Amino acid sequence: MGALRLDVVTIFPDYLKVLDLSLIGRAAGDGLITPVVHDLREWADDRRRTVDGPPVGGGAGMVMRPDVWGRALDRVLAAPIGGAATSGGTAPRTGGAARRVLVMPAPSGDLFTQRTAEDLAGADQIVFACGRYEGIDARVAEHYRDAGVEVRELSIGDYVLGGGEAAALVMIEAIARLRPGVLGNPESVIEESHGEDGLLEYPVYTRPVAWRGLDLAVREPALLSGDHARVARVRRDAAIARTAGRRPDMIRRLSPDRLDADDRAALARHGWAIPAGARGPVELLVRSARPDDVDALADLAARTFPDACPPALTPEQVASHTALNFTPERLSAWQADPRAILTVAELPDGLPAVWLVETAGGAGAVAPRELVGYSAVLLEIADRRGALLSGLDSRPDAVEVPTRADGATGLAAELSKVYVDARLRSSGVAAALLDHAVRAAAAAGVTALWLGTHDGNRRAQRAYRRRGFRAVGSRDYDVGGRRCRDVVMSLNPQEARGAR
Ligand code: ADE
Image (cartoon, rainbow, N blue to C red; front, side, top):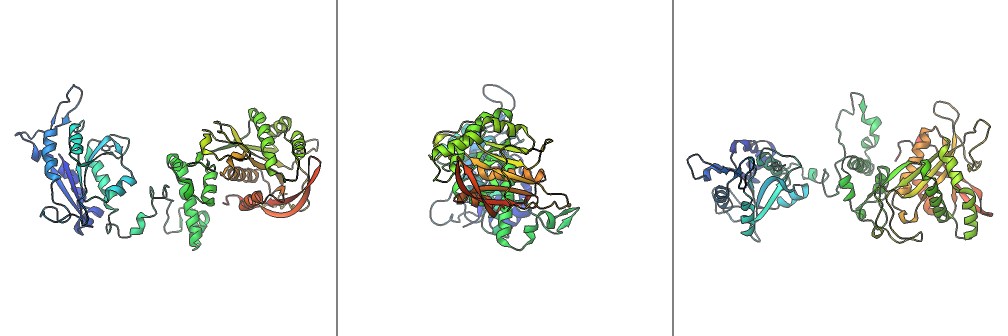
């Protein structure tokens, strides 16, 4: 690969003097790029070196003349490329014609992104035509395009600069650093914002480890662990968190087949689900249940409970359990009682049917704000009359309730439980609800969060284990008059707080 020739045509050649500095200056010194700056007025044809005129049709400002630009660009686009800029005659890169690109910076252009930079880094010559005033007569771009030149009208962002020079400098720096040899350490272009993985870069730190009360040993112990896999995971989680917070548009464009289970869990924690069959993450809202959710919630509860049941149960047994336990009255009582933490999940934008795989639970679109999952944490606290919440199962003996770190008595709660619409299975909705439940339990002072789940339901057990639950025993559980065997799992939310 020969040197990349970068021509800049401008009425302010001195503006481009910074190309002599830093990265670009060094790359030019090393013969990797060849910046050449031209004064547009050299191609004016009057004594006053005029380059502009009033807009045809009237209006404010001045427009740059096509005849002046035409003479300039004819000349610059015919420059020899592939070696020294001005000595001429050196052949372009081997194998095929040289690639010359005419870049016209303009706020009305296509957005210049890292992908554009990567593409343009493969050119042999880039000519930047820097407009001022109201811009360059539109026939200039049209003419060169018609003549077979690759013309790119590019904007560096949604704001208006005084002219194209600053934009050209931005683009030159972004493009040049991608040319081989320009950066000392080529690794630095692999893991960075707007890279191939579609995420912003994770936050970076250097020594000292503790600075002004901000101690990495406390905040980021994994980064000091020396465990490369752990460091990579923590960094990727941080990149996901940062991108979710700052650039939801980038999250929406992530490709599901490049996201592993840990990525999905991290996305779920930050409000994004990936339904099976979806083309990308969709926004997920996890919030406290409101009184007006109760009917939809009873419906969802009745719909999702059978999924968690062993196949041996008859539909009648399941229905009789549902009719007893998931009534609107029960859910309404939970919603109103501070001892129940009732959380729901909804997709604010809904989901088109084509984004969902058909499941036993049904096909069809998810409506905007339709409830797609819920969880209930029931605190084992007696009311003034000494009564526990109705619907709170009796705590199995196997569940121990540790005291709090400050020596105070511990508190038990039943996670009863996490249910998700079958259309959103494996989408991250369950992980998000579970994470929310554990955090809410921690905030409520719970030291033993326990649950019973059918012992044949390995998928659910795996999900609970992933969030830190451990099997502590078993219990018999009655569903519609039939005895079922449950695994009892438990976790101390105080210890799990902040854990992944
Ligand atoms: N000229 C003026 N504003 C610009 C922008 N945002 N991008 C590129 N060129 C410009």
